[in-house]
Image (cartoon, rainbow, N blue to C red):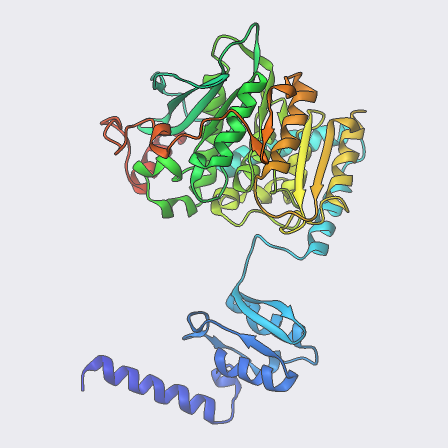
Length: 464
């Protein structure tokens, strides 16, 4: 018998004997997780659905000692040390899941926000908090020493002329060999200075090439502003340099923030841009990026996070919460970060089928209070769509257009709707929105490839 087979047999015999005989402190009263879950189901007459991959080879120490008279308390005692949890799917029905650090109970999120808010009570004390938070955010992102801006010029494709607007694809070098890619939608004709709207992509399939993303940016251009639709890190065309799984690395949130800063540097250098009318609006993960960018960069004068903002959800992707930004200032959350926009105009779009479902009840009144410190409560609005879900659908887009028209004095009448969507917009094929060619053949020779090489470049640029 091979050594591996012998070891496996001995281990199985050990497990069997450990479960079968009386437990004691010498073995920490250990039992296999599956055995404990089976016992809980019998004791409390409940059902626990569990993927075996979550249960396999896991043990519970002091297993019987964790049992309480309440099933929910018992499950918490048993599962928390293993970084597991259950979701309640109905009376007596549970499903085993990995612990979700980013998702809190509603009441816990509200209590945390109330505790944070108790440390300030007027514009002076809030201003002190805001200054401290901004410093801590930059430090948490690893951007306390902001990397020098590369001297290279952006790579810009020829303009494509559409009905009332133009599109050109642009790549901006944000670190040596590291690019952020996007498409700039501009009015076909304009006079004087015009607004610019950053439009970061969210976590929906199709990336920034999606139909609704093109509709939104084209409509904003028709209304009289530049709209820059850009990729999140290791998302969209960025995958020429980095693997899709790199999007779920902690550094993603930092690279995205740096990308947003460098995009602003470029756009605000363009002729005709009104530096007093600089907006940002993204949905889902792009909404989290919207909130963070507005907290970091005072050049942004209007924000509209869509289906993202919540005091009890911190962003489930590392590109939203992978670095310790929420430990800044002794602990914060996305709603307090959104408050850092005050008194700049801010639209919060929420819905009834994700973690923004309770926005009108607690989190939005908090934002109103902060805006009242400045005497500008009217500058923050909430469009809540209780019957809708997690998307950037037509209702959300219409709310954004109206808010932009109101605060940036844009032409809302320029956007017409037919069959529930914006008319007069050309939906381009994905490859038409690429900067570096159909197959990445135009990617510069010095472009960084691979996450390890990105880390080397980032560390060299920030640890001076």
